[in-house]
Image (cartoon, rainbow, N blue to C red; front, top):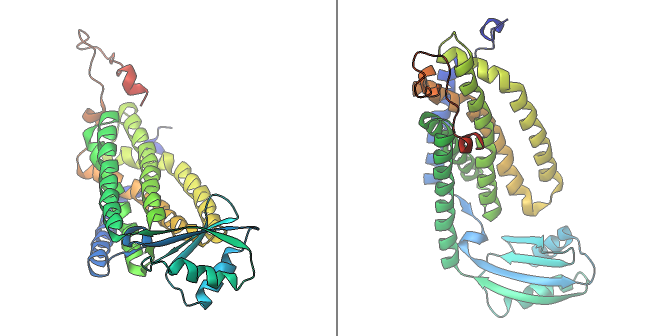
Length: 317
C-alpha cells in the first residue's frame, strides 16, 4: 500500500485556522510587549550582588524568609559554585551599608558565614546586555536561515526561520502578559527553544524532501500531509519526554531556575505546534514543488533517470 493510500490525517486541513491562530497570537504578543513590556530582571536593570560563604549548607528558603522579614524585596537567592556559597542579588543600588544590612538580617538565623564580596552592577551594563541579547537572537536566526537554505532549499530556510521567530515572540508575549521576570536564564531558554524548535522543523523538512523525491503521485499538500503523518509520533514522543523533564525541573529545580524551565515549557509546546502548522503551512504558501527538491541531472546523462549525488560536504550537514 502506498503512502497516499494510507490516507493520513489531514493536518493541512486545519492550516487556515492555524494561520489565524498564529497571526492572532503574534499580534497579541507584540501588543503586550509594546503596552506592558517585559519585567526585566536585575541582569538587565542593574543592582547589587552579595556573596556569602557558609560553614554548613543553608536552606535557600530560610534565607529568603529572613530577607523578607528584614524588608528586602526584588531579590534572588541562589547557590554559587557550591552548596555553602550563596549569591544574593538585590535590585537596590549598591552602597557601603547594603551588604552589612543583608549580613545583619541573615545573622538572626544563627548560621555562621562570611561575607566574601559585594558588587554593584550598573544600569549601563544592563543596557549593554539588552543590546547583546537582541543581537544574539538575530544572529541565531540568520545562521539558521543560511544553514537550512544550504541544507535544503531557500524556501525551507524561510519556512524554518519564521516559525522560530514566531515561537520567540509568543514566549516573550506570555512573559509580558504575566509580568514574569525576564533575566539571563530566560534568554538562555529562548536560545534553547530556537535549537529545539529547529531540530523538530528539520526532521519534518527532511521527510518532506525525501517524500518529494520518492512519491510519484500527489501534490505538495498530499506530500506534506504524509510527511507530517510519518513524523508525528516521533514529534509527540520527543516533546512529551522533554516536557516531563522540564516540569520536573520547574517543580523541583528551585526558584532560581523556575523562569528558565517555564520559558522552555512554553517554547517546547509552541515549537511543536509551529513545526507542523507554521513551517509546513509556509511551504505550501511559498509554493514548494517537486522540482524544487529534484537533484540536478548528471552532466552528459540527459534523458536518463540517473541523478547526480549531492556534494559530500552537503551530505554531512
